[in-house]
Length: 349
Image (cartoon, rainbow, N blue to C red; front, side):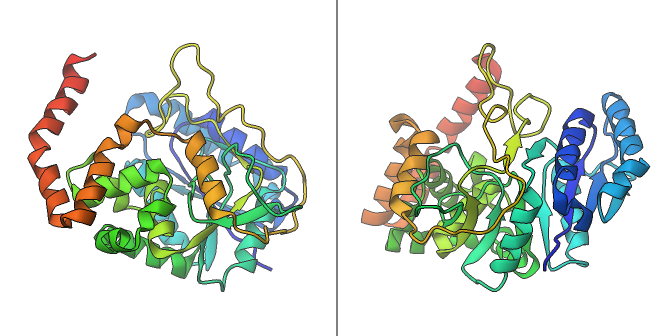
């Protein structure tokens, strides 16, 4: 049986990290699991207090007995959240054939580790399955009766992700080298963009045609933006639970990527209901229902016609004139895009 190590990069969000680890401890499979936590160096004085509290918490004897083993990596310089996580994964890849990635602002269900380990075991030799997702959007997925998980290629949330070393290496190289974006001609020829939800289609098409686009950088790293496009482009799948096993508390303005909700609005991710059962046995949906589930997620994570306008033009140009025309269209619009960004950043506020 696989007991995959868990990796968590962190810096100073003490309350977030404690919530996550305490939720892991509730899992009965925690005692079989090695925990790796990489604590980044503080880049400024305001981070030092939280960082010291984290180091003290991680050194407690109670914590060490809750897991098979606890490994604390203390950075001697500031790596930043992206590289702290990257080097932690590179280190674990030298020791393990698979692992579970968690951000420090998450909370997991009581059967999260069992779910992850059993899926990592079951699908390790399935070349079509590239990842196991712990998070599932609040959607009433169309599944076979009694199913508690399903394979899909419309999303690959990084909020709790199980990965295998060789598959990880392949995906990372396809992204880092630019191959994922260079598949754009094939995506147009085969109509693979139709398998993507609107948000993914917009990001991928604009990034492939326009290397100065905001999203272009996210397709060169193993981000969830790149991962969900990867599934559609290469006809691969991620395993996803019918009910989420992860809750995200990061939309409070404390992290790098997630902004806090506007005043008076509730963070929907922090209040999302997650699975509270204590055990898990895989019952995969016998039917895929790909288009039905794509439409369901598309409605939840929706984009307006105005937001989709540019990507629709690029797809039309690519299909009817040539990809060179779509790229030229982006190039001619470069001054306009820079002007809009400058206006939004410096004047509109």
